[in-house]
Length: 204
Image (tube, rainbow, N blue to C red; front, side):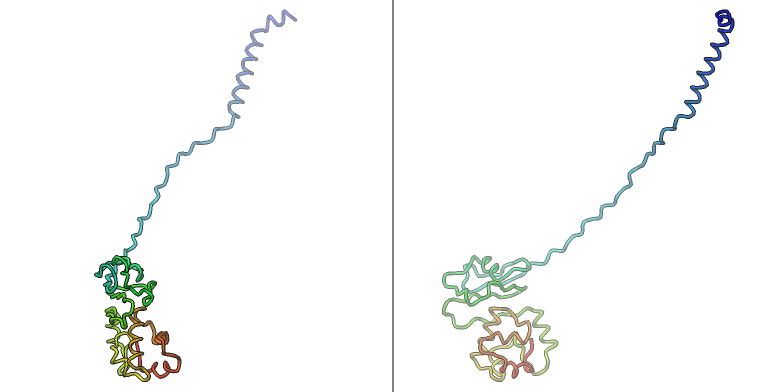
């Protein structure tokens, strides 16, 4: 047996080497391929430009009467009468703030008059230009505009005497222009019955 191994030892070594090489090749060929590497480039995103909100124009308001510094003031849109009084340095000790609506929203070119205690009547404010122009263009013939009429013009209405005419003017001064003809019923002394007589004769 040893003689046989000695004689064929070279052949056996060559065969073993061939088997090892063949096995290594088989294992190498059957090895799974590594996953392909994919390189992606990030896509550019477009950021929308910020939209600018227009800033409302300031309101020009004339504050007069029982305030520390009567003058024309610029107020932000949405301001109320209280803001106007504060801008004018506040009310004086003589001011009767119970007669005005401090929560009323102000409008451009408005006159705000702060009355004194014991003052009988309030000055007639100038209505906004938009109300004046609208009234002159659409006011039906023969109707009295309760936002712009004087005390004498209001006195021509049925059931409206000098006292009620003055109350209508004071209501206008305190609360701003009437938004509807029905609002005139908020004036003390004007009820549903009197309004029925007035509704076809008045406008805003």
